[in-house]
Amino acid sequence: MTQPFRLALIAHDQKKDDMVAFARNYENLLAPCEIVATGTTGGLIQAACPSLKIARVKSGPLGGDQQIGALIAEGRIDGLIFFVDPLSPMPHDVDVKALTRLASVYDIPMALNRATAEVLVQKRGLLRDDAVEGTLIAPRAR
Image (cartoon, rainbow, N blue to C red; front, side, top):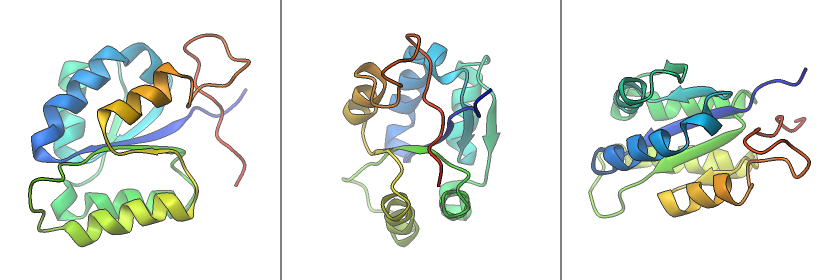
């Protein structure tokens, strides 16, 4: 049996409602995933989607972005959906840049807005071509 897809979910404050709505819309596709989320985002998603199993790390400004970055570097995250708010100043902007850099360095799928996240899911970007509809791909060997 293949390992579940390991997905990180993060959202800036002004994008948390969008992330919760996204998770609700795709709950059936996210259910088989091992999900890691930053603290507040993970709590909101868990409350809205009780069928999802979410491991929560610290809030982003308190080190959660760095914790997820470390998981990416360790090969323990297979994809990242991070709804960023480009119009709000972030005191931890350096952490956010480091996280997105790590996702690029380790070549994992990364969506930074809802439109891209939906393409990944709807257009089977995160789905195997030969998979049963709604089954996420197995992680790539690193």
